[in-house]
Structures are given as C-alpha cells and as structure tokens.
Image (tube, rainbow, N blue to C red):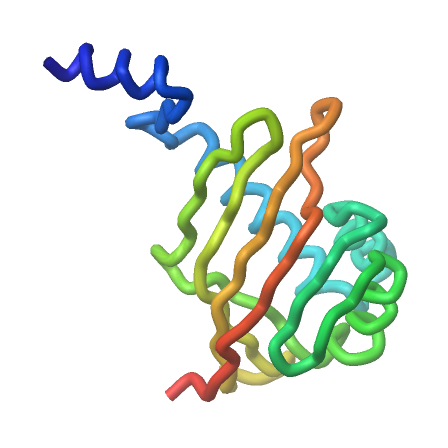
Length: 152
C-alpha cells in the first residue's frame, strides 16, 4: 500500500519526498555559513562572502525596514546598521525546508538577534528564504523577515 501511495504521488506530480534529509542538511549548512559571514561582517572579506549568498536582484521584505530590491542596497544597509552591532542566531529546531521543483527550496524558521559584545538577545522574528540552485550554486532570490518582537 505504501508503494502505491508513493507511486500515485509521483504520477500526480506531487512527489513529496518522504525523506527530505539531504535537502534540509544542504540548506541548514548554507544558512549556517551565510549567517556566520553576517555575524562577522565587520571583519575583512566577510561582508562580500555574505553578499555572495544572494542573487543580485534579491527582493528582501522586512516588516520594520520595508522592501529592498537589490543586493547592493541590501548589503549597504547591512554594513550601516548590522555589522559590528548585531549577530543572528537560528532558533534551534525551527528550520523547516521544502523543495521547489526544478528550482530549489523554501526555508522557514525563527531567528533571534543579539547585541555584539554582550549576551543580550532582545529581538526575535520569523524568516522565509527562497533558495535557487542554478549551475551548482545556491543563492537566495527572495527573503522575508517578519513578526519582529521582543524576545522575552
């Protein structure tokens, strides 16, 4: 019966992998690497490394900051408002990854923001990242950060 259900899912074009472990591991690794660069973006080369994870025409939607339409503007804002001031931490167990057929993946989760040089993590928010795999390279094409609130 289980094989029949899997076959019907494949034939219907809705093949949802029972085991998404490989894709989830890939996106989790990308998330960790990208935000390690973000968290150290005041160090030489790290802001450029962080930028490399984004398509040049990134759309970044932030509930408090508005919409950013290009990587250059997004990175300039990161440099001005984040680098050396805040770090991002993924809330353990919150990352969820879903495949997007012939494109890449959607990652959602929660993250907190902490002041650099202290143990204060005052803000928490939800995020959605749309990852595209093209020519062996993963990049974020759309990013949403929303529901910002105090981390009590």
